Length: 417
Image 1: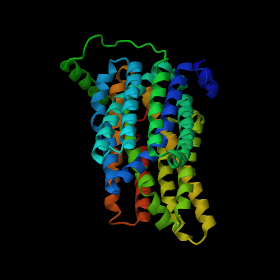
Image 2: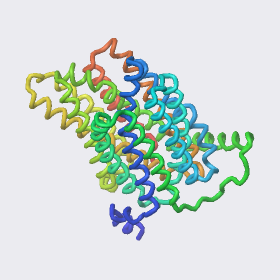
Image 3: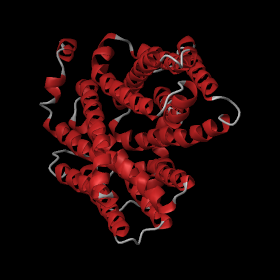
Image 4: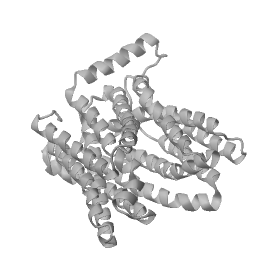
């Protein structure tokens, strides 16, 4: 009977989950603001410094709290009122962001102040992320995870595309300051929506958390993770996936110019096709998850992603045929975006299903920190390899490693459920 009810679940049923829809709406507003800010902040950094190295430094500062603070934040978040924490952190981030915009408009902002504001904002976010992860299972039944995650991801991709498209117009027409103000307003709007969230939380701390209690809670989360091989494997998969997509993000321009022999027009096509593929991948994931075993979802699509990365190098064989180059780029980018999205959706859903709710904030914080750490480490490795190997060779190597790792996972039957 339970299997019959589960098979009837679809997107219509998710639209009836009003509390989860509040989470989605708040997230979409945030995503729109962040999409605009992603462009505006990049322009602002370069406008203030005129140096590319500052962009790298600010990017590192943005990632640092996710790696260093979040694993310790999870133990604090576990016994807190997570709804209140999400609302408060959104308000704080809104204040920080609007402060940054005011300083920029008043021409007081300098690179060092911007670096401090970035660290503050990311540190606050390091507390919000575990709270958001732990809230979802409290308002959404396990049977809805696949479709709920898919709907959230699909809509986020659409909103991100709209935000990225609108960013150029907003910056050009109204300036960088206005774009950053829009991002700050999105935080306040998110906090307002989340304030209406109806959620019942148990085992909340009534008193202040003492150092000894915090250490015990932190150790308990680590011990739980050590005793759960499936969850450890999910954490390693998150690191692997984030590392695998680094060449796709960091070598976009060299790929288009050196391997495919084209200009900025193809770079736009590449980005649009990749993002569109991600949206489609998240949308179709629930249907795929109902047909394929969990192991195949990871290992099969993992090997496919490696083959798709290698496929980009075929473009060097017919650079003079613009139609073929564009067709190859659109097809490969779309499918690699779809594959990545399916893998990320599968990982998110299985992680929530596997981790006990009382440990979700703590273990989720470690999960997110490991995934975040993979990006700068892999980026550094890619930057070193580019001095030794061609871009084409790096994509062949990355794709091959991806196929080999997931093939080994298949052969040795790594535990994934």
